[in-house]
Image (cartoon, rainbow, N blue to C red; front, side, top):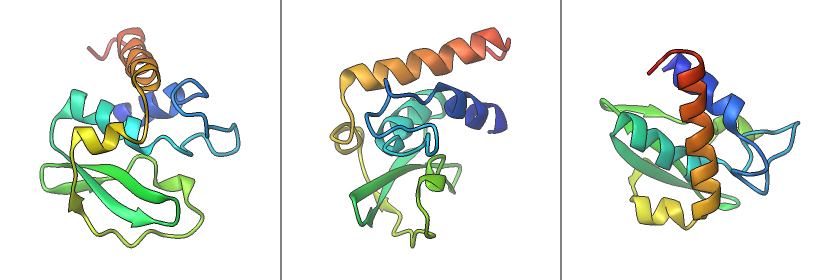
Length: 114
């Protein structure tokens, strides 16, 4: 999971979320990240309510993985509500999804992880 986390952190950009900033690179990346993680690792997409609306993350092998939790200043109280690709896609768009997936896959190829 460490390789995936590093790939995501290096792949987030203004092209994968318009809320991205250098100070908070995971900001606005939750939906698109949950989709790409599911593409690579399978599992489920979960959601929990937060101030900005829904926050999306993954469940793999009965364990919660929230790769974008550091975007929040305060700890989340996870509801672990089962979500879907369709709901997570409402948090992003095709261009952002394709940009993140391409960058993550390029990272894996560059690091000889595929």
